[in-house]
Image (cartoon, rainbow, N blue to C red; front, side, top):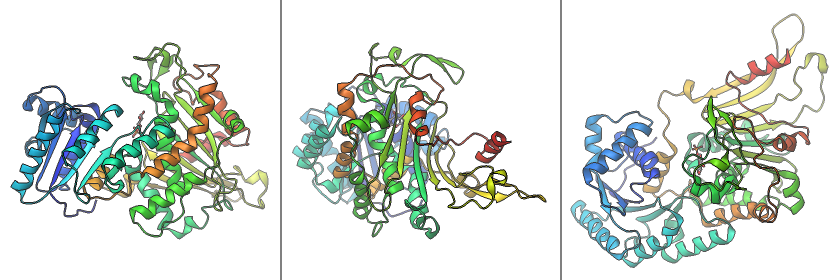
Length: 511
Ligand code: BG6
């Protein structure tokens, strides 16, 4: 990461004792700190409604860093220096008093630092607190300097188009759009950012990145864990709202967008929103034919017993919430005419993996004949976002030998082999960008609304029709059978990145 001179910063985390702060935010700030990315003068306030001793708060956060930091357990000296910047701040998110005291504290820091510091207010809270926090920040003029003050809002951004629009209206009543940073942590992932570089810094791919050469695109975000302790939230959300509306559609945007005119945040975000606007609206028939939902039943996952979704904590035993979605979309513009985009995501699947697969078209004329051409469709570009971070290109090559035999080979770029430096966590990148006032990796109001528009026909159809066969897939599988059928009826199949390399696996199958 390039180090920039950062201005002093007052960082306020509403929900400072919550799970996100514990697992992600504080470990990310810690890594930014030890790598020299935070300003010399900064303070982090963890706001929480219950009383807590500062020492206990520090111990709680240290445990989080030791457990979740990518750089391993904190070093004593480094932690000692870092923790001097962190303060527990008892306060009700809905009470004037909290914000009055915050105003006094932040102004005192400004005086001490002889500089009006940047203010970052992080909403790591349940959606019902967004309104009171915004109102009170505004009432106490805490975020009045448009160029210095910003808020970071976590998903969910509403639960449908209507509530998202209401939320956007509410936020823009109190802040300028340029101050609102809506987080989608997928945009902070190193491999997702690299996709833009890959596409727009290399002429070789850009020239074939269109319907003339691409047969279809697959975007898979699979998790091999269940909903765990998040039943309360998940039961209301489901996979469509939790993953497709945001993370998968963002991946679709980065894959399908036109080259932006500049690296300016607005130019990039304009091109992304264009993709969402061009998604062909799904009709009722499309939803029936091209959207599959699933829910996991009982079984075994990673060698352990997995309870069915309906028996998870805080889940309705008759729940119809989906834990799996697969769908087919089209982007109606010149570049992507009639190229299907298959998206799928689910909990309790065979493996945790996030992949974008670009399947190129077949050669127009096969010179070699079926006997020597083992796999007619090898031209594939596989972008593995996680856990492997790699980009693989599959192409045909002649196998060494006196006879002409052609098999696919694989050309790989892996982060592990190419770079020594460790890769930052998405939250590190995003927090630093927010501190430096760069909104490129955050979502604009119109983007969020356009994404809701894409999924609205599905939400409406599903509201009217309950799923018939839930639960319909086993933990450890790849989802309901209908998800396989969705691609199979188009004479295609889902691609995965097998543990031991694509080619080895394919060749084995072909022999
Ligand atoms: C979150 C979802 O936004 O992303 C979770 O709410 C999901 O349900 C998570 O598990 C996946 O993120 P990652 O970075 O682990 O792929």
